[in-house]
Image 1 (cartoon, rainbow over the protein chains, first blue to last red):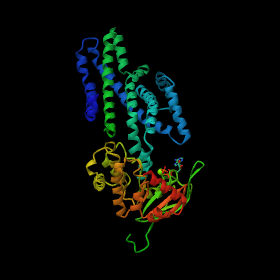
Image 2 (spheres, rainbow over the protein chains, first blue to last red; image 1 turned 30 degrees about the vertical axis):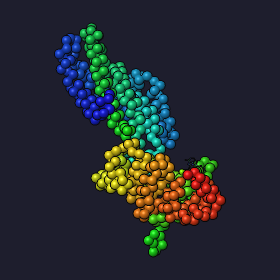
Image 3 (spheres, helix red, strand yellow; image 1 turned 90 degrees about the vertical axis):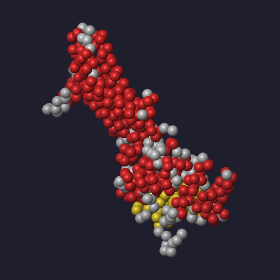
Length: 252
Length: 252
Ligand SMILES: Nc1ncnc2c1ncn2[C@@H]1O[C@H](COP(=O)(O)OP(=O)(O)OP(=O)(O)O)[C@@H](O)[C@H]1O
Ligand SMILES: [Mg+2]
């Protein structure tokens, strides 16, 4: 962690390259492992990729939703504020599994004829909405933490409200919000496993299938756990480095 | 002043009023400011000095009355507001430098975003301004790495980067340790001699007396005296001004 703080750029690049190398290269050691792991190596690789894709897509969409809803909660326009409050209340008060099932089973009935959502898309939508609600609170707190003088200085210099938001408020609020956002992203790696309930073949589902075929749950689930640990560590390093990068203005 | 023809009016405030709830901070304040003039605004705490200054670039919107800056009426019209914010710079008591940007980027930000100046041109201009306030060598640092006096000099450079015709100062030295006051006053003195129009809310009576062309004394939301520094300091008309001056003198 100390090294990450001192060399945030390198740590970020390292974590990203590490993640890619891991995703591409993990097939090699896995294939060399004895049964039941070796024969199922490709399934593990595919499962890990789906998990990472779900995390990255829902994580990015969730940050966007968090920023928009966080702003919405601070809006002077009360219907928007109420709407965002309601969204956060609804998502945080119900189980993620229920949300995933709802998107999977209820959306096809709501959506117009002809639009079909894949299982993966349903999982991504539900996860985005879920993490977005948790991000909303972090973003709101971050925006509230920006000193009012910063906004006045930007306005006095003639920056438009949008320029002020993008150039001053957002980067400064992210510095405050990032640790919590990073936490949410790390949880997302694990929460994405609930997508197995709607037959998305992500990492946990792969583990379940492989152990069912081989009757050897212990080595299979240990392998799955190790892969999750490597993924969460990579994401945590990535966000810690980003945090350090954004923190530069605070250094003495 | 080197004026043979009549000095040009740069700011005109006509019967400006402003209330916060039931409290009337400004009552029918009228004043005319001329190009190149340096005006010191003094008065007891809570008398409306900051509020008056902040209505001049619409950080505060007046409830009644009219403000005209360089021929442009200050109102909710965004075009007018944009034009006026380009012409009127502001320096705050608490500096309000953008904490996530380097000193150089702080100064270059508004020219890049608002004036759409190419980055290289904006940065070389920023360096010139930093040289003018004696801080060229600090360009790559972040605001927290600078002393209060240095930060305030950067804030002055940042305001100057927009080539304003008028600079508003709201107690620019009040947040500084005593040993840093002079370096900021020196920069302001140099500016005053450069011919820019300045309105300075200050408790530095020495500065007001020596540098200002004009002193305005605020009390309870009205301008009680509007006169030359020599007259104000040697022979104020109103009892309130006399009381204020004796209090200030005893404070030092
Ligand atoms: N945003 C606000 N909301 C409510 N009241 C305010 C606000 N801004 C100023 N006031 C009140 O208006 C009055 C005038 O304030 P102002 O800041 O203009 O005084 P000032 O002359 O600058 O005083 P000081 O020397 O303490 O800075 C004060 O009584 C203050 O409490
Ligand atoms: Mg004030």
